[in-house]
Image (cartoon, rainbow over all chains, first blue to last red):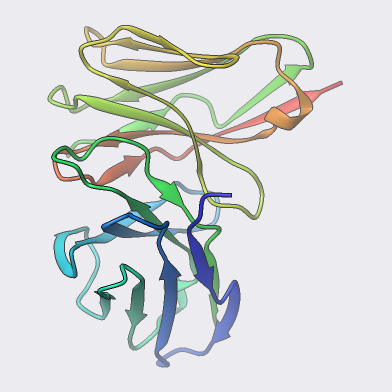
Length: 115
Length: 111
């Protein structure tokens, strides 16, 4: 139990639709990041938020966007869904304290299937 | 480009034996590495980490070794148990917190 909760756990969308995934960070964590994990592969970094601002982004197109709220919960939005967006989306949080090291706590993920 | 990679996709280990999972990294400037365990249907779970100023770090039944000369990382699991069956990832942490994961090694523990 990491204290990071994600919803929904599973969802199915069709190409062209939009999806919003939600994450509740562990209490006291001010940094949240999102990862995409395709089947049989390692997680790929999408972006990171610190105190409600994006402070790092991976190689993902602009149709992947996010938000972090004052209570440190977070959303991942994906527009114009493509078949290749089918994956497990992982949210992770940590408490930034001057260095970006220390344990990153992952949620169980949201499994997105795009048909 | 820089990458973190794993040598073996699958490792079959007999229960009670020791497991060794290897990982190569290419960014010589990397200074922090983490091992994660991911069970089926779950998110990655932190196992152990190591900073580049260390060669070895031990946890409960696990040891991580870092060889900066050849840019190699390994995870040793002592007395492997059925509950150790999972996919193991090494990850490289960059300066602002992005983790770069390898593809993973599937560990299968046989009775």
